Structure formats: C-alpha cells, structure tokens
Amino acid sequence: MRHSLPIAPFRPRLIRSLQDYNRTRLVKDVGAGLTVGVVALPLAMAFAIASGLKPEAGLFTAIIAGFLISALGGSRVQIGGPAGAFIVIVYGIVERYGVGNLIIATALSGLLLFVMGLFKLGTLVRFIPVAVIIGFTNGIAVLVALSQIKDFLGLRVTKMPGDFFGMLGALWANASSVNGWALGVALASLVMVVAWQRFARRVPAIGPILPFGDKLSSVPGSIVALVVMTTIVSALHLPVETIGSRFGGIPAALPALQWPDFSWESARNLLVPTVTLAVLGAIESLLCARVADGMIGDRHDPNQELMAQGIANFVTPFFGGMPATGTIARTVTNVKSGASSPVAGMVHAASLLVVILVAAPLAGAIPLATLAAILMFVAWNMGEWREFARLKSYRLPYRVTLVAVFLLTVIFDLTVAVQFGIFAACITFIYRISSLSRSERLTAADYSELADSTGAAGQSVQAWRMYGALFFGATKLIEALEDDLPAHTLVLDLKNVIYVDSSGAEALENLVHTCHQHRVRLIVSGLMNQPLDIATRTGLAAQLTAQSAADVQPDVAQAIHEAVRGSGASQR
Image (cartoon, rainbow, N blue to C red; front, side, top):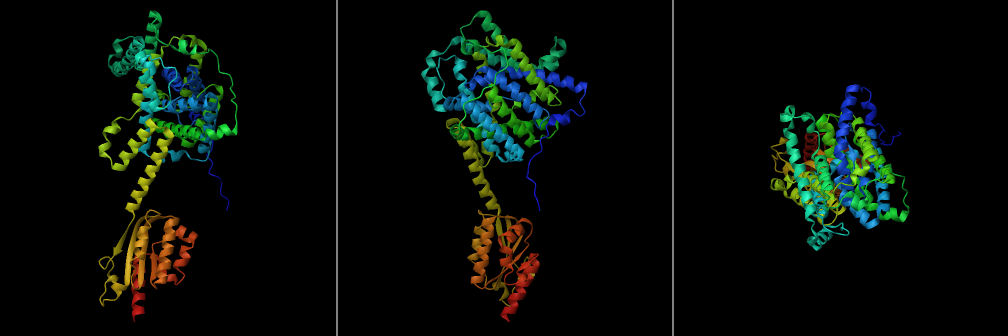
C-alpha cells in the first residue's frame, strides 16, 4: 500500500479572499492598509536601528516581506514585517558575525520555515508551553527597553554591547554623558504617545464636535509624537542626534540586490542563529495569526503561513532587509481599521514604498530620542507583566519555568532560555503523566468471583486494573507487580490504558518472562487500539498467547472467570 508524503498544498488565502471581492471591501482594505502603513513607518525604522542596522533595513523589510506575507500567507488580515522580538537576536548576529552573515542566517531561516510549513509542522508550534512563551517574551521586552536607554538619554556610547551585563556596563560607564535635550525630547515623546493612546479612546464621544474627529482615533500615538517632535527639533535646531546625523538619511530608491559571500563554514557557524530565527519567527507569526482569528472569527492556515514567512525571509535579506514575522500591534490595527482580506496588507506595503520614493529626505530629521521613546512604549506593551503578579496562583513547575526562561533570556540569550524552558516543560509533563498513571487491585467487592469461600482461590489469584499511559515514566507500576506475584494467576486489565510506548511494551514482556519463571499464569484483558497495535508489532501479543489463547481476554470479567476456573482446576 502506497502512502503519500504529508506535504501541505500551497494555497494562499488571497486567492479565496478575492472570489467574492467587491468595491466596498476594496475601499475598506485600502483605508486599513494606509492606516497600518502609518503605524508601521516609525516602528520599522526603530526596530532596524535597535537591531544595529540602518533605518532603511526596517522599511525595506516592511515593504518586501510585508507584501509577500500578505499575498502568500494563510491569514486574511495578518501584517508581516520587522518585529521587536527579533531585535536582541539580530543585534547579536550583527555584532558577532556581521551584516553579511545576517543575510545568510535570515535566508536559511526562511528555507527552514518553508520546509516546516511544507511538511505540516505549523501545528507543532502550539505545543510550546505558555510559560516558555511568556518568559522569553518578557525577557525580550526588558532587553529591548534596556537597549534604548542609550538614545533615550542621549548617551555617547560608541558601540553598545549585545549582552545584558555588557549593556549595563556601557550605560554605567557613560552615565555622565547624558544629553539633557535628548532626554527632554524622549520624555515628551513618551508622554505624547501614552497620552494620545488614552485620548484616542475618548474620541468616539467627542468626535462629532471636532473637525475630522471620527478619524483621529485611527491615528497612532507614535506618528503624532514622531511628527510633532521632529518639527520641534528641526524648528528649534535642538542639539539631539537624528537619523540624518547618524546614518546620513534614508535613500529615496529601491534597494539593490545584495549577494553575500557564502561558504559552508559560515552556514555551519550560523546553525544556532538560523534555528533561533526560524523558531521565534514561527512562534510570533502563528501566535499573531491566532489573535487575529479571535478578532474576526476566522481560522488561519498555519502551514501556509509558515511557507509565506519562509519565502519572505528568504527573499527580503538579499534586498537590504532583516528577519520578518507576523506583528500583533499592526495586525490588530489592521483589523480595527476594517480590513477584510490580504489586500490591506499589500496596500500597507505599497504605501511605505511611496513614502520611501517621495518623502525619504524628510526622515533624516527624525530624532533618535523619539524613536527610543516609541520603542520603550512598544517594549512595555510587548510584555505580559501581569503574569508575574499571578505567579502565586500557579503550581511550582509553571512558576519555575516562567521565571527561569525570563532570567535566562535576559542574562544569557534566547536560545538557551527556550531550550531550558522546553526541557523543563517536558520533565514536568513526564512527571505529571506518570503520576496520572496508576494501578488498582480488584477485590471481591468489584467481582464476586474473586471471593475465596475455601481460602484458596483468593490467595492464588490477583487482578489488577491499569490506568493512564504505560510509558518509560510509569514502568514502575509493572515492576511492582513482578515483586509481588500471586501463587497461581495474575490478571492484568489494560482497558483504561490509552498509550503504551516501547519501554512499556518491554516492561510487559519482562512481566511475561517473570511469570513464566515463577510458574504464574498471566491473563491480559482489554488490549485495544494503540496498546494492541504496539503489542502486535513488538511480538508481545504472540508471547501472551504462547501458552494458551485464553490468556488474552476481551474484558476483565471473562479474564477473572478464566483465572478462577483455572486456579480451581489446578487445585483439584
């Protein structure tokens, strides 16, 4: 019998979304796309700068990856682009390996993401425990905020280290170089972003009495702060660092193809960063898609989404971009702005392209202190800080996993943190499943045939019922039976055993051999589904019926009847 490979079909959600498309939906998608483009503009530049790259890297990523993820993805409304979660990883790769190797690592992660989606591994991301996700997300948020203190205070730090203690050391060593003007601009920007978010919630009530009041709620606070503070800094010629003074501005042209020097030695050294980028990208993207599903009452295709993410991350770095994934803030903005199809995401990318071609020279005047304030706000919103306050309501393994992953992310790196978190979660899972697996001795109160009216059968026959999973963490239950065998017959009911692994099958085989050595008859009942399958494949079923076909019974009642009958016959 031939089995086809588990390969996912390549079916972008855009194709299905356009089947009943009309002008009304187009107008909504264009409006939503333009709104998201406004939101994405400062964030894309800020994420790139914080990652140790030029601001245009973020814009190119939002344009190219944003377009590809929307056009080829498995979600109707997800917006792709550079994300805050990548800042720490990208900065570390650039610092250790250089921009050329970042291109290689990003492209290889794209290949890995595509393969994950192709072989239907999108659902596996859901198996990563919540404690691990919250732990590393909060850890990344702390590192993002810490990395922005330099520009927030206007410190003169030549090169910011990528590690936690290195950052603290650099900030402490240069604490005396605080630029008061930069600090003022940053504080004003942060206050403006926070205040505008609160004001926007009240706009629906006061909108009718204001010109264009109904449109104000869709304007993000980051854009308001960016425009106002850029204008003030330029008009007053304040002595603060800007995009133009540090990077020379943003090119008003499309990026050219970049082809780095590739070698297998580089690829081997970049294995861990590549896997980290791919796994983090998959987690962020699919979590974002699930949030979007809850808002619009839809269900995304996780495998198609991973394939789209893979294509975007393979193409984008060769045109000056950086790693991309689904972005929750921009996706939520897209949904709230009325988006109904991937067209909105494509419009968002096109609007950023127009900004680069038309208004790139204006971006040179943007103060870096304002971008730092925006990222501070993003970092605060990124973290699930309430989970720390709720830790006392969870069990110890959950608390240890979350706090450990958080601290490892901050102090060491994300790769170590996730590896530890998944390992700890696996150990916890094994312990809990093994504790749910149990054995219960059946008595005459359960089955009257076990009653010993003569004092012989009850001593010579034991009946046990197993519950749960019989795997390597629960084989002690079988070993306990070997240590206390009855005089004549042992009945083992496996009806309530849902799973048996190879270690469990081996433990049962050892029980068969031990019973034969002690001349004790073993009767097994309730063997079905997966336990029956592995018993057949490992030869256990044949061993059970080697002495008599009656040693395997369909249910425990018949097994006990056969055991008592056989015990009585032997005693006569």
